[in-house]
Amino acid sequence: MLQMKLCGDLVLREKCDVVTEITPEILHTLDEMVQMMRDQNGVGLAAPQVNITKRFLVMTNPDTDEVFKMINPVITKRSDETCTMEEGCLSVLGPDDLPVFANVTRPESVDVAWTDENGRQLAAHMSGLPARVVQHETDHLDGILFIDYLSPVRREMVMRKVRKHKK
Image (cartoon, rainbow, N blue to C red):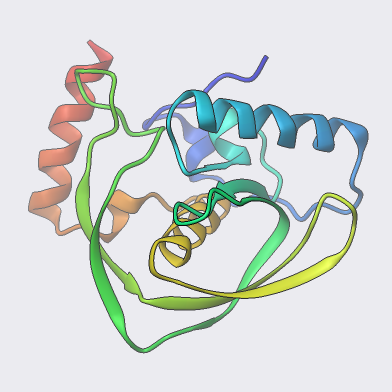
């Protein structure tokens, strides 16, 4: 049974290792992560959030409900155009046990390449919400949280809520 790691846990700050072999354990974990993401009403979940320091994630396209299981995802291109949207994270919870949200500016669209659970090399151009989700989740694989994009004042406001969750 997977367990969600929360803000403050050092595993969330680690740079994850490349997956060199798609094992039955990884396939099982990807399935469990999809279920966990859905159970918590999330749109993405990266391996370090469940205490695994390997480069894989699951995400849903919020527009179509299509699920992606991405192994070794790489963002190969980012648009110059940016967009500011509210972001939250299943690992950054406030006192109500719900994600804390804050506005984050990111590229509007990205090109991403990955290996799927069947070992196929895939690539896609994503924009809007799917682009936001894949950027957020691939950041997790490099030990980056969405709060790292906030101004010091805004980050402290979010962290006050996070600290109240831990009490």
